[in-house]
Image 1 (tube, one colour):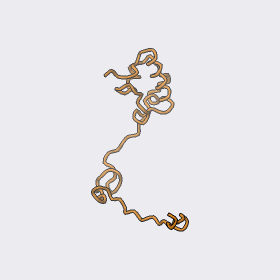
Image 2 (cartoon, rainbow, N blue to C red; image 1 turned 30 degrees about the vertical axis):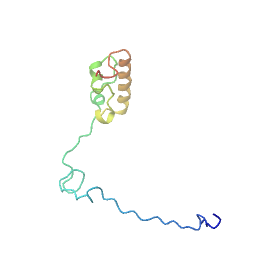
Image 3 (tube, helix red, strand yellow; image 1 turned 90 degrees about the vertical axis):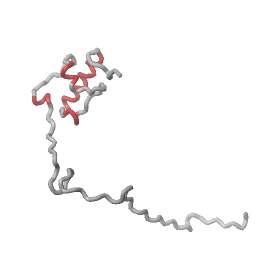
Image 4 (tube, rainbow, N blue to C red; image 1 turned 180 degrees about the vertical axis):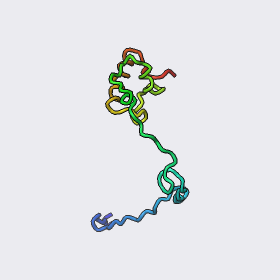
Length: 116
């Protein structure tokens, strides 16, 4: 035991070994075809129209918690409130919409969740 030599960490130099570039399970990706969406020659195939707020276009100021037909369009099948990015409603009306949905749930006009 006494004849064992211990080296200090400062005397040892640790050099990291270079890692090979990961090319995935099938190797490097093939180039995209010319008409593929996402750039390149030809551009995108499908044009997605900018969503506009239904309440702003129809000039609806008050969103009532009693208007169940209107509110059901903004509640998913499972009972969740549909986000702005899917419905296209502006921030101001989304806040009012979520308050109205929560109020109508509390007085049992809308369901909290779907039945299984």
